[in-house]
Amino acid sequence: MTSTQEIDKSSVPDSSGHFGPYGGCYVPETLMTCLQELTRAYEKAKAEPEFMATWHHYLKTYAGRPTGLYFAENMTRKLGGARIYLKREDLLHTGAHKINNVLGQILLAKRLGKERIIAETGAGQHGVATATVCAKFGMECVIYMGEVDMERQALNVFRMRLCGAEVRGVKTGQRTLKDAVNEAMRDWVASSGNTHYILGSALGAHPFPMMVRDFHSVIGQETRTQIMEAEGRLPDEMVACVGGGSNAIGFFHEFLEDPSVRLVGVEAGGRGISQGEHAARFQGGKMGVLQGCKTYILQNADGQIEPTHSISAGLDYAAIGPEHAWYRDLGRIEYAYASDDDVLKAFKFLCQTEGILPALESTHAIVYAMERAPQMAPEAILCVNLSGRGDKDVSEIERVLKEMGENAS
Ligand SMILES: *Cc1c(COP(=O)(O)O)cnc(C)c1O
Image (cartoon, rainbow, N blue to C red; front, top):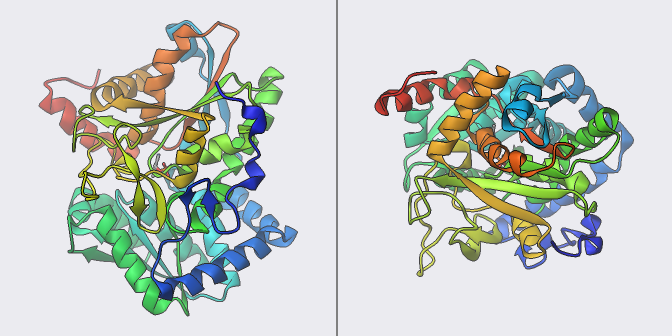
């Protein structure tokens, strides 16, 4: 392990949005002004107790915070090692951690006098969370989604439309998440006068990686209080799945300066670590620029973005949030990956031992916990962020199990 004593989490990002060499603001000149305006407005809002109190009010009364930190007694006994706790983000409104960020950003948009919200979505979870808060706060809502994703995630398209959102199918490129982000940015260049873009992960141009991280840091802040109440000390290890990296950085941020707490992010290992078969950016990725920031990206020698694959749509993206790249360089956060096959096994395991159906994304962290807990002492504490619930995934899981000739048990 590194000398984590040197970590000063308040020093990143710097004023230009850099996490070491990563992050920054790589956008067309036309977007610079609106990103700078957003940065100033956010810094001001964050310092105002009234803004923060309003956000906390809706987190509590609308989203369902605080979420529990649940001692997974059966799982602990079965695995025979560390005491396992699950942070229950799966119990939040709309089914995952994403509501923390969208509530924060829509309040900011209101403050800025915006009337219209746009967002990108891949699997549809961020689109659903955004459409939901737009209904609640009476904002016009346009969601950009690749046409391929719209077909794969038809139920989420329907949920967004039920909340009054307009879902715009994106026909360019591979017609998936990356193309939806491009379209949303194009819209924003033309509409930023009355429109706020709610970005969905700790990614993109400054201030998004910082702002999204801050809005999710509530996860780790609660975890700290809750584990102190339950055990009287900090956990030995914490683990979370990493797509863009928002649930993980939100879970870890409060603990970055505690060297005794090991932090592990789990990426999507897909069908194996070979080209096009996974989305583990730290397994073969390189530094590059994608959609507004410098970070680790899966790309070929010519800098072309490689196709990715994961059983979980929410982890299926070629870039990782820039703050993760920085803390990996520093050795403060370590990264593992989980394969699709192991994710399916862990999904069944958690359903059967604890009666909890995790999202396939979150199940990547469960895979790690199942391997790691037995190697740890019985008095050790391992906390897992259960970023979302699996209801959205059950029909896909049923299909995959059928294909494999397996049944639900
Ligand atoms: C979207 C999503 C993720 C991946 O996004 P991060 O920004 O990496 O957190 C993980 N888990 C769930 C349940 C999600 O919906």
